[in-house]
Length: 133
Image: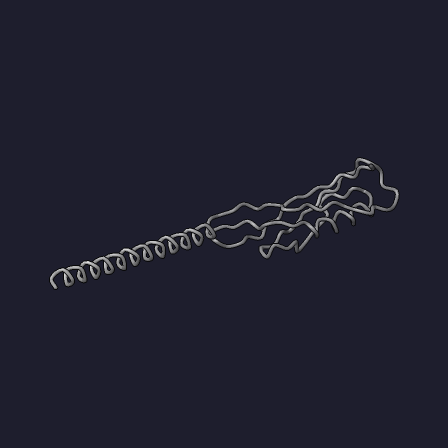
């Protein structure tokens, strides 16, 4: 009888120990998951510079444009990740190339700069040079 009682208490003790160990591991993994989530939130707040993802180039330039002409544009890259304004800062002298350059600049894909956790509107100079292929 003593042997059965002793055996029963041993099994009960082992079961409780294993259950506590499993609960401690679950709490540790939850804490690690929370730490990872907090780190990701902190990473989102970090500053990030402006970055062009995909540049667009003028297509279908008609007219009598000469090779080697240059147009300079002033492009507004909005915080919503859209180009909102394009102005010709320095014309190429070829109306067709200027117009094609403005259309190409409107299609630029970019990541806005992040400062103090907020996206920033940025104005940058963009230039295109016309070369016949």
